Length: 388
Image 1 (cartoon, one colour):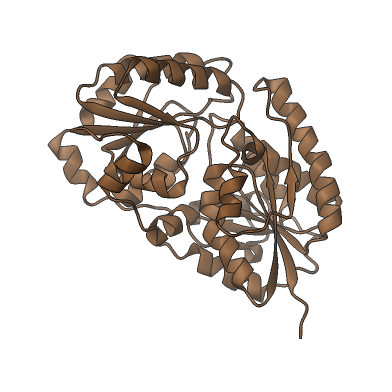
Image 2: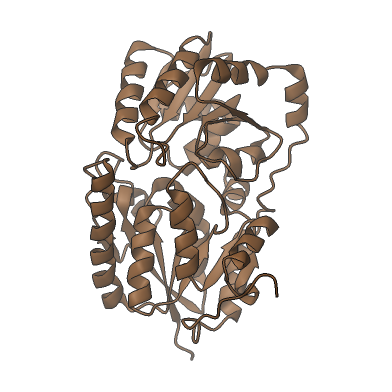
């Protein structure tokens, strides 16, 4: 019997784990692979709901927990957390000795894992490379991880070409689609009553889901932008407003504070540290729109044929479905976008919306590639010149 190859999946946030969950299960169920799992980042933070417990409740064993001390949301604090991640991943990966690590996205804790893996000579498979978010530090981190990685699973032809443009061998870049579409198509959503009971709220005639994160490449603008958004939301009538709390990024705490203050003053507003994927998707299905600056508004919400109001520059550069309305981070522009989503002509457009991020078969495609590719001889990469 052939020895199973060890694949170590690393997760640092509730949203990222939600995208990875089906893939983690597929690796665990495979006869060819041995699953290893590392939880870090927001999963181990009390402020963000100790979401590692959700991983364990899903039946997975967490092999290592790496606490990177997310107590500070200053630039220096995030830098220190990144360095703690490198130390923690170096020790844990040396002990686990995986044949491959599998990572998704563009957060600083994932960069830490990539750097440690490079020095430990462990090949890296990276998901969702080649994408653009020109208003956030995620942009530079994502492309850096691409250069540290060896196998690339991308969500669109455009993103595939960009990864190759960065010098990666085309034979190791695989177009599989976005994992968010997979997760949605496999989910058994809660109905309206079930969701109301679960969240202890009541939906109204209109319903809005808010996902707003810090704009990490702008100096201290996140608080101002959130205040403008809250002004616009406060003008809505007969509307239930559901907030999901922001990620652990620079200036995240001020957003927490503003949201908590708003919900105390408005009985129609509710805030949740972590909805979990099922409740989050179920909330999208019941909402009129998702408003904020989260990647979810572009990658996942269009599958529901719901409106996305995308505020500011955080997601600038990403592909967008016709259901996405871009607006500036000020009261006038946000209010205008909120009025637009209720216009008959826009509602008609939603009915024919197509999500450009895949067909819901990404997990199967990724597993097939991993089964048929050797993890040996990946470390020495040749730079591929795109124009040749």
